[in-house]
Image: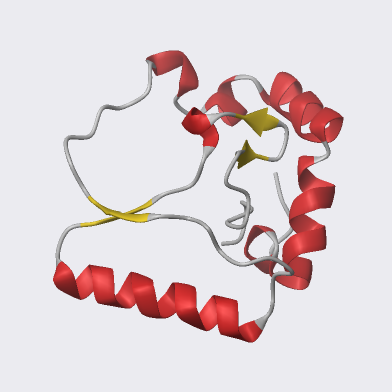
Length: 108
């Protein structure tokens, strides 16, 4: 599913800063090779106007976000939709990915 901007090194859409940057975490050399090949293919395809800057890093200890962040869209649908509309997230994702935005199935 294509819901982010992997060419943005400063955050995601209206969410700015290091906490909002994308990263691909891999568990082993095989996954790293697959991720590297995928990034190279996306860059070569020119689907995106700018190159992919999403880093590929070795996975480490994972810390889940606080409970209030889990399934936020389902727990707070009105606020989540207001955020998405207000920051232009849907328009930006659609402009980046076209018909592949949101997995080609619209969005919730």
